[in-house]
Length: 117
Length: 111
Image (cartoon, rainbow over all chains, first blue to last red):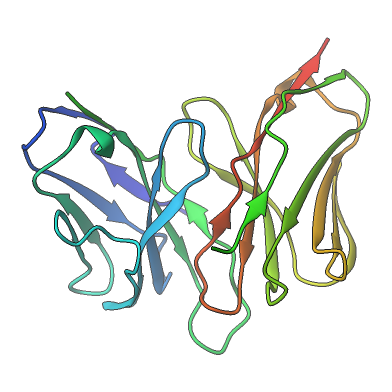
């Protein structure tokens, strides 16, 4: 079974530029998450989708970050304009979880390391 | 803010010993608990999950959950140098199904 795919793996941009990240979850996984991991910290949720609907985006800085999962499979996360403090690893994860079941395990992709200069 | 706390370490154990990693959480409504292993420069890898009080064993790994004390631990038996990594504790609360992570404990297994 293929894992979660992400691209690009690395990105270096200047502040105020824009950047986009792509994620393809494990086949059949209804729920997709984007996390931000700053060096030395645990991942922090940015946004959670179930199929193509947003479940939780309370920690997404909506003035600069946006995300979509239009067909309920692939997802993109965009930052525009980027700030220095956005330098982090952006992790995509997926799970089989849907409302009413007890499957909560999440599996992570390799991540995208973003450096903002 | 619902907290997940871990000692950042580093925790150093000799090869062959038992490594004990601990995690406490603040939200009594937490229901599901996970341990992820993260090698430097890599993404988190799920190694154990536990949903009920007690112990759960998988190979050299044992997860222990005590909901009354709001405490979850991971034991690694016969530790190997390849176990050297950061171990992240993560919790799902009643309020949603995203993972709330601790900062991780760095484990070093010395030959």
